[in-house]
Length: 276
Image (cartoon, rainbow, N blue to C red):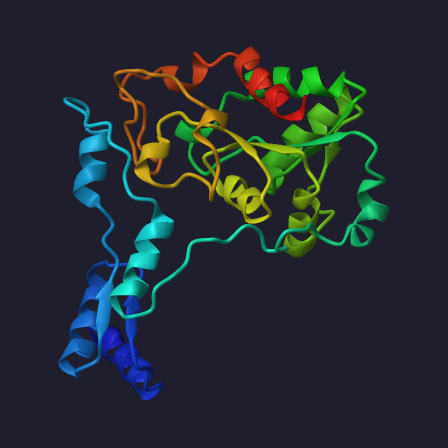
């Protein structure tokens, strides 16, 4: 409590006119209360916890599309008198990043470019790597496309090194670009294959179509990439899914059928449907 009081004092000293609480947890609720007592306009996000809980419960699921997180954030600002027009297309406007900035690293673009980001934070969101390798091998053998691998960290780098040694046409981007130039590269892709992960959202920031694979989680929870099309998702209709809003819960069946029963051919078909 002492720490929250210190934080409140620091925030109060900045003399904000409005308070937008995009988090709505116990700590921010306390800060909201203090600002309300100081007669400051306060609005906090409605996370839709009830609807999400009904979506992921084991029995009697209610499969209703929840409001997107983008809309929820915008609603907070609108309640404070600042309406938000949700018409964003890309951080590059209607164009793409400066290709000259990355050309020496990625080469000239003479083929269709596919980005593949095979990892996510939780196992319930990762399409099995042995299946993903089949997808990678398929496109690595196609001279009309070039595949870039996106990821980071030691374990991911080890996977990429194994793949690039088996399929020399692949290009791992680990350690080659920073965040800004990686977004630049993404803007020149024709499609990104991603899990329900950060890379889905990064590709969405540059207006690139994403083929997204969903296992324990579901687009209905409101975390679909910005302006991504439902037709480009790969997911199975199983009675047990979704079982988690964020994907951190272990599979109660123990087999991750939601991911393991998706065939590599299904993923390949989605990608080819976009680049063909």
